[in-house]
Amino acid sequence: MTNNGSLGRRGLFRAGGIGLAAVALAPALASCSRTEETVTLESLREQGFIRVAINNEAPFGYIGDDGEVTGSSPELLRAIFSELGVGEVRAESVAWDGLVPGLKAGRYDAVAAGMYVTPERCAEVAFAEPDYRILQAFLVPAGNPDGLATFEDIASNPDVKVAVLNASVEQGYAEGAGVPADQIETVDNQVTAYELLENGRVQAVGLSTISLNRLMEQHGGDFEVTEGFTPVVDGEEVTPAGALAFRPADTELLAEVNRVLAEFKENGQLLQTMEPFGFTEAELPGDLTTEQLCQG
Image 1 (cartoon, rainbow, N blue to C red):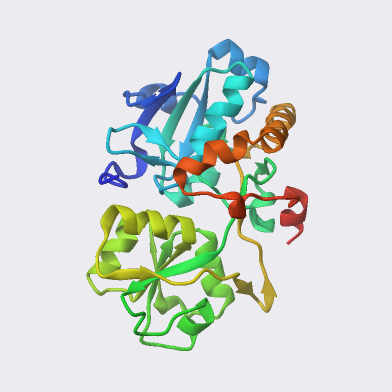
Image 2 (spheres, helix red, strand yellow):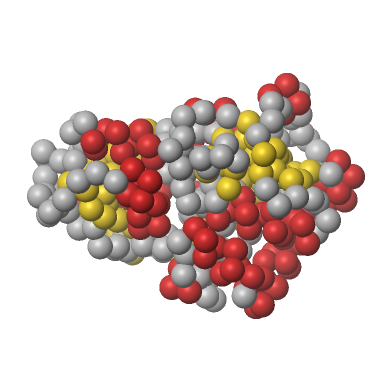
C-alpha cells in the first residue's frame, strides 16, 4: 500500500459488491448532512448504501495500491451490512480528528477506522461491541537505541520525541504517562509519522502492534517494532480495543449491527474477515464488552 495517506484528508471512494472502487462523490456527500434525522436500517436499505468514514490507516481502513478502500473495519462493516440488505458502502478518508465531529454532524452514518473504545469517546458516539483487542508498541530505529518499552520511558528521556495520530488514544496514552507536550508530534496519518522517524525528527512512532507491523511491511527501513505492551494512564492499565462507531440516536441500527456481529463471532466469520489484515485469534475481543470499555 504505497499510497497510504497520499490522497490526504478528504479522498472519496465508493464500495459495492465484492470490491471497493473509487469514484468522485464530493458534492453528494457535502450536501448530505443529516444532523436531525435518525438513520435506520430501513432508510439505508431504501437509499441502497451507507456512508462511512475511514482514516487511511493500515490495516484498519485504508486505500490499497489499486485505489480501492479496504481494511479490517470497512470489510467487516461491508460484510455486516450485506447481511442486513445494504449492498454498497461509500467511504470517505478523513483526518483522525475529523472522524467523530463528522459522524456527529451527519456527514456519514458510521466510522469504520478501528477506533478504540474509550470513556471519552463513549460520551460522544455509540460503539458497536468490540471486534478486536490489541497491544501498543513503538516503531524505533533498529536496535532500539533509546531502550523504549513504554510511554513512561519517553517521559523520562527529554531527548526522545514520539509521533502519534492527532486526537488518537496514543496521544492520550502519552499524555497520561506524563510525556511533555514538546515531546509529542501529532500527525494526520501513519505515513507522515513514518516520514518523521525516517528523517530523524522523532525517535519513535506510537501505534498499535498491528498498525506498526503493517507499516514495516509496506515501507521497510532500518527500523523495528518493539514488544507490545498494555498502556498505563494515570496509574491505571487500559484495554486497547476497537469497534465500529455510530451516532447515539441510531439505536435501532446499532442493535441490528450488534446482532449480526454476535453471529459473526459465534460462527467464525469475524476472524475470517480480519485474518487477511494480520489479526489472529489472539486479537479477538473474547467476552470483552463495550459497556466495560466505556466505564474505563
